[in-house]
Length: 108
Image (tube, rainbow, N blue to C red; front, side, top):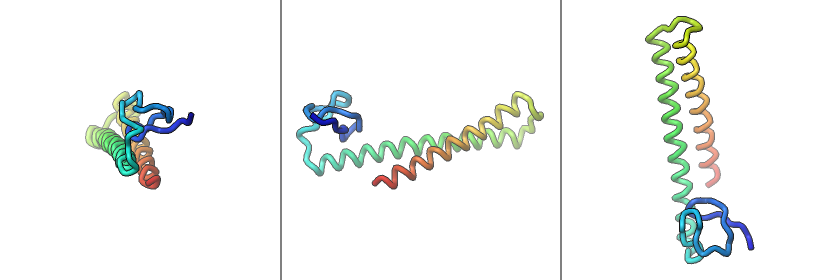
């Protein structure tokens, strides 16, 4: 008995299972072409998820930046901390999601 990953949800399952207990995908009746197609679809879904996350991170960063730039908060005030932390979190989140996207594209 070996542990394999489901071609649809990429979770670990036993090779004895006829269908995945997580997503109920038929594992034993798949041809190599169908298997490859399912893996490609899973990879594309993961890439889309991280592209959406990078877009949200960019919105967070730009929102903090524009509020900081146009509202001129007083230094060390609550608004100042909120805007700078939004910029920092958005920037780091954006970088991490973009790096992860590059890694996913390299795995092809």
